[in-house]
Image (cartoon, rainbow, N blue to C red; front, side, top):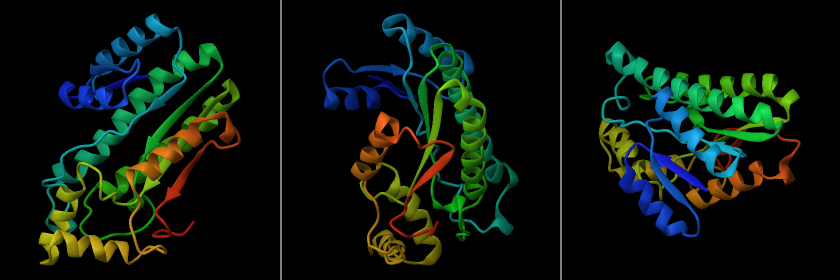
Length: 229
């Protein structure tokens, strides 16, 4: 397994937790040259790329929690440009190798604003919608080459590293604590709770496996009913 991230310290910590032959690398997922160099190093070592999983993120200190009527155009455009560029680059470069080997799985990660209007989300909703559209487009082109493209759409995982920051922005705008905001979002799901990192990881493993060979060109809804499909 090969892990990559923009800051090596965090990636190395995860690699140590996983153990085994997991390798860590520092990669800027917005830099085509760096991504291509990393993929080449992987291919040189193991000869192929079976799964490309991208869960890129950006700081949300100004992206959310502000009304669209008050949001700067740069802050509105930033998530749209960042997410679409990163997923396009990583998917395109991985696909070139997967086409040669006639197999592979490309995975994307979005969130529920892709499917429903939520106040104070800024450009995040349009960004997530664009990534899901890209997921479908990639699948339509790559499926004939034996490549599946599948997305995951979780809802506010409390045990993730960034959720306190994101929920805090919305909580401040609503004048409540982040714990209260979390409870409010959870109350809108069928299970009255939010999904976990483990649930998303388990679904990622299943979706990437041969057991999900019929799954492509779609995004798996992990919102626990927060968004109906």
